[in-house]
Image (cartoon, rainbow, N blue to C red; front, side, top):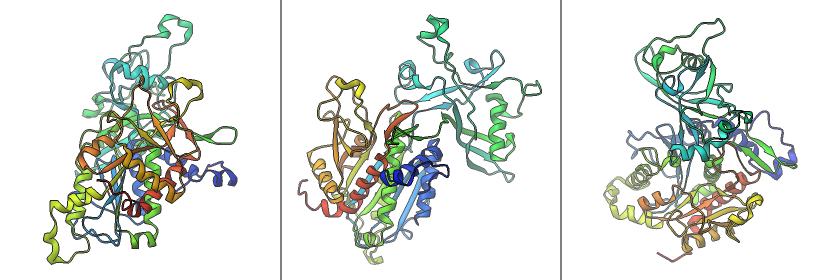
Length: 494
């Protein structure tokens, strides 16, 4: 994994908190869901993974010992490695997480109505990306977005000279937006309640440029968005503004991730939910499958799925409710890896059932760490600590997939890799969040569990975890990939 050139960690700190520098670098790179997927693609390519396209024939491509990845919508990524001893019907060891995060999405018309230039200011029309929506979501999750320096990035569709349209990623090099609060001196208006359509509109500049002229861009996009936004994006990409066909852009916290605490024992960062579990899951997959001895003896398909859309319900083709995982597993079995041509007819629904009946999924999403300032809201004995161990998340009402059998399996995995496990369950008088676990559990039918890395300030623009927690996650998840083949044979429960 890559590290930041400007890391200030000492050698002692690096050895105390393995993977902290790599994780800080990743968070800074992965400003949007598209940048996160692209970062992981590059890591997989460096580790020898081969890209697959859904529109291609996979049967001649999938080989024993092969390592592959694919993306959907440039925002969801799935990677898998086929053990050299794999036989059709053998299990899949699967970790599922999500790489989308709370942000402010640029509206399709971002320069008119309540976001039109006003009082000499250019403003940007945005909408909150988070489940629930509406004023309640603004009051809660987005209350921390006031007075923050915000960056702009995402994907841009550009038409080339030959008429084809290509996708480009963009991330402007400097913060460009801010949502200013009203000073407390104004009294009642500064205390709210606020109208988030009209009073939480980001300011991105002054209407007139340095020469005192208003800028205009020809074409349809020039009528929908600020000319200065279009020019800034085009300049970063090295294209003409009129070559931009459309884009999916978002505002994000521009401040870099950093270590925190007197001994650097914490990580302060944006987008922890859930680039934290995603980082640990994919790193563990690369680590395990880079070991030739593991791959040579493995009968298992080791797989990681990192999904978009979790924060808004996991819908659409790139969400966990889509058919990506089911389709990929079916195609792996259909390819009949390692079988002779005359045995291809053995591909049946029966083999798919065997595969899923032997498989296991970890739904990996962050959970709440113990906050010492709010002691009374935690269930006694189920308040996870930072820098201690991965967390088993339980909920009897179906918000989590955990049960006694899956806990038993993961305790065996933890023993095999010397990992410590913690527990979290919400109190009866509190509301539980959700994960991709229940959705995928319904669709796949394999055994599953919800496991987490703990954090504080969930859904704030900037959250906090332990400096050791990314590495703690890698240790356990890698242990899962390495140990599942042996562990699943010990638990004789259907």
